Image 1 (cartoon, rainbow, N blue to C red):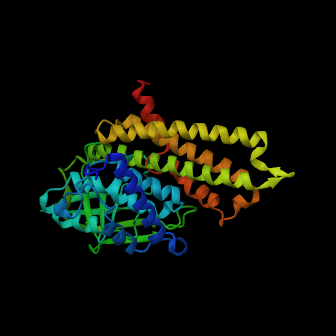
Image 2 (cartoon, one colour):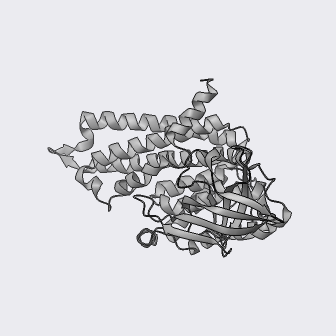
Length: 383
């Protein structure tokens, strides 16, 4: 009898299988309705919490597993991407990889006790409000203001393109507390039901239809000082510290989605015939698929390397920027070429490649556009 502990690889495999089963039973049967409603049911988060796939690294005293190995988060993202239900997985990835770090690392004991148990269980849903109607990738241009009033702050402003915006119970809001472009930003948590905090439209997107994406409005919202994350004026530094993980998360998703759509397309071109033979046997098809397979494999190696670096806390913003822009642009290329190989059927939403094509388009925009990623890399070159 083997009494040895399972290896990390075996743990990853078992975890991957459990996430895949979760998606098959708790996502697939409901996803069409969620897309029609433009929002996932809140019960998805509660089921994910019960499954143990929300904020895994949270300490056990808050309901988490205390596992700091980010490979597990990467596996969650990959399995949602491969399933074709990326719009359902995005909300969970946002809670784990984007909102989670702020509430795990920047909170004091009292704040952790207030928010982490609910975020781990899925009873609370998180969002982060950075983007504004007139401010996209230029975070230093944020104009939403937080003015101190005694022990409180009064927040005024608007945000847009906020994922989880309709469902969110706790929103990390980036607001300006002074005129300094970089030292004038501060992070606050605004909770559901706070007077003056209102949700606008659930935005009508071309892809990721089940992911609620909203406008948020703040009119004289009084937030207690106890809801500030870290010190006043540290917001820009805090954002820069957490953005590499967000960008790596998007790169991981992009590679897995590319692998999935290529696999589906290989099966399709083997079965679909033209001029009396499978369309995959034509030289153009073979060469195109060979090109895509090669580029995806190369991207996989780099992304896996970045995940390993991140687990060792050695991933740099520049490395994350490289992974984000290259892999998301590759995802656009792969889905476009694979849709073309499907012919007219690729334009039909009943085929997975059509949804993959629509869901992929935003990948080069959110989390920092391709152009901003190249700017980060270019500056690192001394240019």
